[in-house]
Image (cartoon, rainbow, N blue to C red; front, top):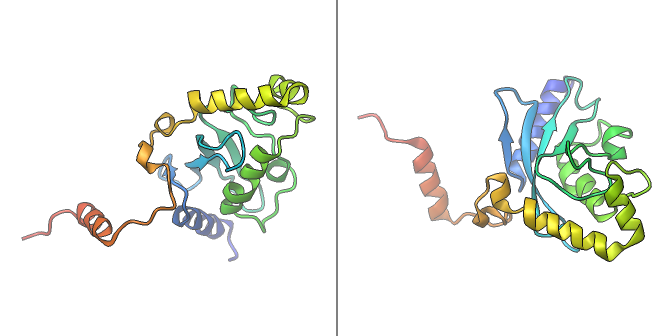
Length: 183
């Protein structure tokens, strides 16, 4: 694994083969969207966000750029741009990490353990420090208003990404993709 482009391709394929829905933005493999579900046991549970990921040319030696497309109420996410203030992503990134780590570890940790002392959204940080229950209520309101599956273009039945296709469903999808055979 000597070249960054091979590593980028491998990490992207690993992410696509995981439980995350990945949408490519263009023909390159550097810009894409990932559907991310809020972690259980958090006020973000039930929310679904479309995350834009941009991989720099120097990936994995340089961290990916991560941003929420639909709105989220969080001290460490800019409400207007969706930019994420995440130390691991922005400052302590290591080539040992991969894209699956971002969605299975880093983003869930960010949502479970916000850091109001280093805010990008000062209002959310102040509310969290002043009145935790009011903060959690506002998070839930944002989830209901901006983070439903239909808000990111997913059908509600696409919510659970851990369901396996039955063999019949799998075969019918293959047939649809293959099209008609030449006579």
